[in-house]
Amino acid sequence: MTIRWITPLLGTAPTLSVLQDVDIHIVDVRDLVDKPGNRPDVVKLKIIEGYKLLLEDKKTVVCCDYGVSRSNAVAVGILSMHESITFENAVRRVLNATGEKEIKVAPLQAVRRALSIDEK
Image: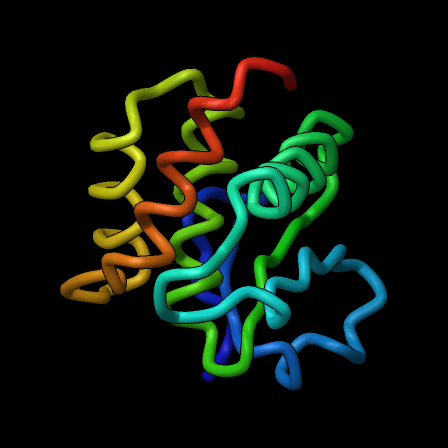
């Protein structure tokens, strides 16, 4: 699988498919899980990492093992924060851009909780 670009600067992919590309900055979310148990503060740090890279106009790819659930969920948070759009609009944009039909509920809920943390 190659990078699935959501915007010209934000994409998702499996980690192994982008490790060698020096022009891409990776937000590695492999330490998150595809089930309940992700701490909102940890998820928020991943979102902020991607957000800051986009503010610097750096190509940013959110990566997990397969580039699907965890990476797409965190990309939703990054996109929502970066473009100041609603969570629901960000979910739709990520799904449309990646061609996925859904994102696993638990990682998506963790991102929603992380976005409700007040500090940026």
